Amino acid sequence: MLKTSSIEENLRAAVGSQNLRAATVGDFVCGVRSQFVAEPENEEQLAALLSCANEAGVGVVPRGRGSKLDWGNPPKRADVILSTARLNRVLEHAWADLTVTAQSGCTVQALQNTLVQHGQRLACDCLWPERATIGGLLSTNDSGALRLRFGALRDLIIGVTLALPDGTLASSGGKVVKNVAGYDLPKLVTGALGTLGVITRAVFRVHPLPHNTRTHSFSTENWQTMQAHILSIQDSKLAHAALQIRCAASGQPSADIRFEATEAGISAQESQLRNLLGSTCAEQVPESVWKARQELCGWTDSAVIAKISVLPAGIATMAGDLEKIANSQKLQWQLVVQATGVGALRLDGESNRLSAAVEQLRSDVEGHGGSVVLLRRPKALVLLDAWGNPGDALPLMRAVKRHLDPKSTLNPGRFVGGI
Image 1 (tube, rainbow, N blue to C red):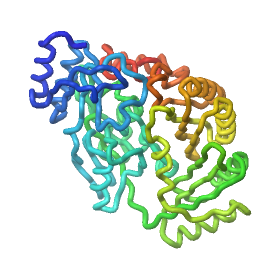
Image 2 (image 1 turned 45 degrees about the vertical axis):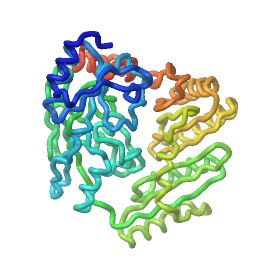
Image 3 (image 1 turned 90 degrees about the horizontal axis):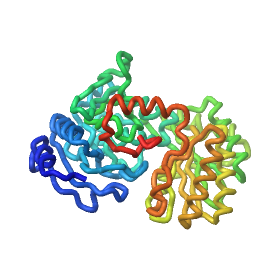
Image 4 (image 1 turned 90 degrees about the vertical axis):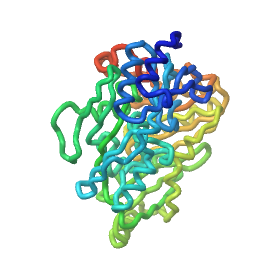
């Protein structure tokens, strides 16, 4: 907690009195009390405030619109909430070069609305795009089903500017698609949960909007057959943009495949799909099936929401383990997993049973080289570690944290291994 008025005075000097207010209960992070909320008007104010907080030894939690603010472990300190709400502009759309630069507080939907004017898009289907900001999107590494065709966020970002805890504004990358010089800071901060620096702006490569889109779905009686179909599709020459599997307790697995092309191109793809599936029938369905992950992640206080990652060839094994564990603990479950092996899991039930199920599933998945990361869990399970086994990379991650944030000012304790 902040104890002296001199710290408050310094914070106000950094961002202006009009841009600093007392925190309310709604500003607390995972139940951890905050003292102030700062809303700087520009990068310079943001960097100055961060430097002031760093010198005073207080904890800072960066915040966009707060759609994923409860992801990760509770912070050890959350004295100052650093809001990027006023850094909300699209700075430059170089449509001829297929790049765009946006401030971190700009929402994904606002960015897409700008790009669509030139027939382009950021090829990322994140959760809640009308609320998710560019900074939050990158910090949580929230890639969706389009990752299969266009790559993850680390493939789409080509430049970044961020404020380091000492007040330095550091930039890396550039505004051209091919840029390999220097330290790859954009990839480093993507998925770091705001523990290394506060993103103030980012540069992305963009893609043309598709001429037409069409989605087909098919179901199988068991996971082994579904696994065979998924691997067959992935090994084929189909040029699909996305491929996901949906399933819930006591239901059959269903797969959705999305094609983006001209009408003639889609028709040819559909013909190839029918040949691959054989007797399994695929039917055209509404595009709304791609909202399944978002619907699954809707929050209640009796559910665990997790990101689960396995090898593509291990999806059926993971699903079988999940079903056995959920049944033994009398839990309801839903799963949406991409063909890449990255998916979203929801478990509903009593807290003690949820905890036991998570520990068992995590043990099974990690035993096969995968991971289970908790995004949201009931208040009763707030002390259950979000990340699981960090593996051999933890010493390196801690070294990077010490180098960029030696006082552990940013999001202390939220990331892997208590970073």
